[in-house]
Length: 329
Image (cartoon, rainbow, N blue to C red):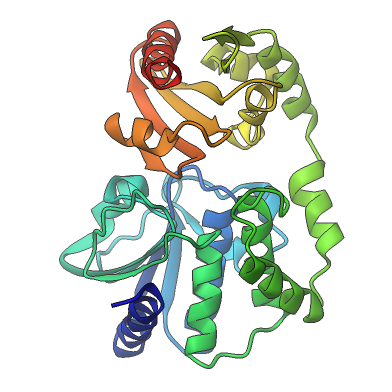
């Protein structure tokens, strides 16, 4: 079976899953990025058009920079409001593995059915129904295909969601995942009234005061190894407290070490709690950082992945410098 045929069958199965069920719980991964947030809203929009009842939720708050999108005011923050019930029908979006949904899984009924919509190559195909396209630039691209397959007519609300997810996961249409198909979809969305320059300014260009102060602090930790082929920044809990920054303000920091000339892999170490370090990895393409992350319990893409290390910042740095360094020899 060729890839196109398999994908068509997955679209049909996902459409049937949605058509035959109701009362959905829609969830993306913890610490949602642009694609995760946009995919959540886009899924809600699809369900609304079909007259389905649904609840959108995440373990934490959605990034405020995406508050202009339809549905952003409807997502529950599990940390503040926990539904006093269980759900039997789940749609997960942009989650490479079950654990990426965090504590939301406590809301799943023991017999819950789950539709897994994702584009990560490391997706382990959890759930009872799968809509996975590894070469899609973003999960929103798959949801756009699903909406068209289900003969829904995209409006500006939906178009803004899809465009935002594509824009953020392609780095402003600059990364290698910017395919002709992505540009064709983008052109269609612009024709529906999407203000591309306004969205780009909002999500890619504008920075908060706390974000720029955090950047100043983080750059003072810039370090190199392996003949400057490996570079990294580190952000501690104390840094976050001192600058008043939030997790949203960490977005994009990993690109600074990665963008240094000659660097093959850039890393960002973020202390999430005492003894818990989140590591973001970005590769120029020479090193498959998805394989490294997956070996440590994480995952992602060949050029952009992440994992969590137990220990101090210093211990996490030492471990990752060794792991990545082994691939740079």
